[in-house]
Image 1 (cartoon, helix red, strand yellow):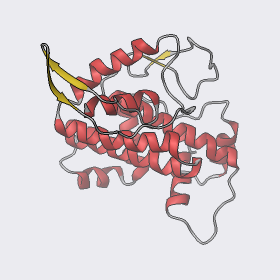
Image 2 (cartoon, rainbow, N blue to C red):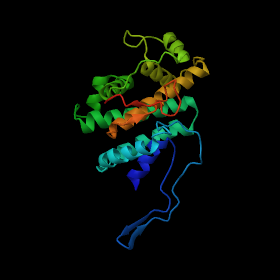
Image 3 (spheres, rainbow, N blue to C red):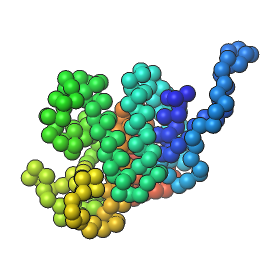
Length: 244
């Protein structure tokens, strides 16, 4: 039931739960849960599901996701990643949403590259090689084949990124801009830059998009998704996930 809860949360981008589930063996009830699990009220939360194929997408997510989450350490990591995602996607303002999404991405980076792929012998070794949070997340997103450029229509984020200091001699892409804004919020200095509210909003969209796709990649999902960064919001406007 916990794995189903995690996957449904990932699917809709808010808290959702099976209510009053009952388990049967033949004609006999063998278990039941009569507690009231947390469920969000109906809200307009961003989701990667498309109304024209949503049932197919959820079916595929459950097929791939239940297999991945059958390992306790996988389930434990994704439980926290999904919590970061839901909070960033549906609970808070755009500024703290960036920090939550970045924390979720860091968790996934360590789970994938240290615990699963064993590319690094320890989290300390990974952190030393990556040098900073941006390096850790960038390596994870590269592993997932997730594009980190700034979409041309996110003009406020483009302008903000152009005004930021370069990162390792390079102009900041979407991830670089997200990390810079996150650092300014999580590690505030005496004077804070007056970034445009729309730049914060676009950075939050990008950060949640990265975390959303990162979770789907971890779960092994290979179907279609509706990108939150796409200009085409009509029903049926879907794309394959970038790693297929």
